[in-house]
Image 1 (cartoon, rainbow, N blue to C red):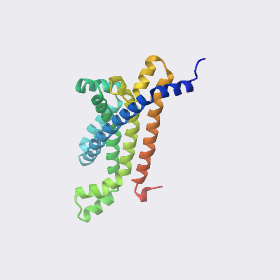
Image 2: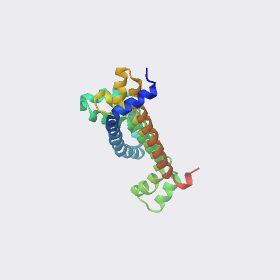
Image 3: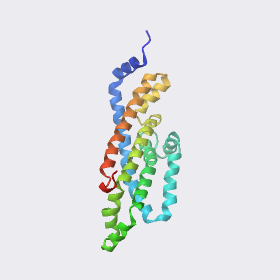
Length: 217
């Protein structure tokens, strides 16, 4: 008697739950490392653009172009530089995550009320003090929104890492497609979707926490 999709899903999970745990850990590792790199580089880059406006078209335009490149193509471009494996996947995911973080950092700082900046200058505050005590605190919720967007994109794109031997939940999707086993595809796709939803929810909470009280609706 032919099993239903649900029964196949339970069977595949029972057979492969240990491998699934390893793949989920690899997936989280890819997302975490690439996002940390994107935050460490993206936020300062966004701040730099606010200080040197002539860089805006180059930086935002360049990161925008990177995100228009299909995920598999970007992975392909990285292979000659880093070879097959996790380094290539992290490099590609890092580049894919830059635009929302850089753009939101730039936008958040630019949207800070100029009256506040002038008042701070009138009080004798230096540019560095204004940045860390006024601009960044007020822009933090917008920056968090960019990090949230980048993270969700990152989780989905990380499934493609399986195509270059970097592991992750995409392994199950890739094997399922090769063998035409729907349940195996779902074993990889469902945890990836749940991970994206959970991270989106958690980062959404952080975004609300970082919103200044006076700006909350």
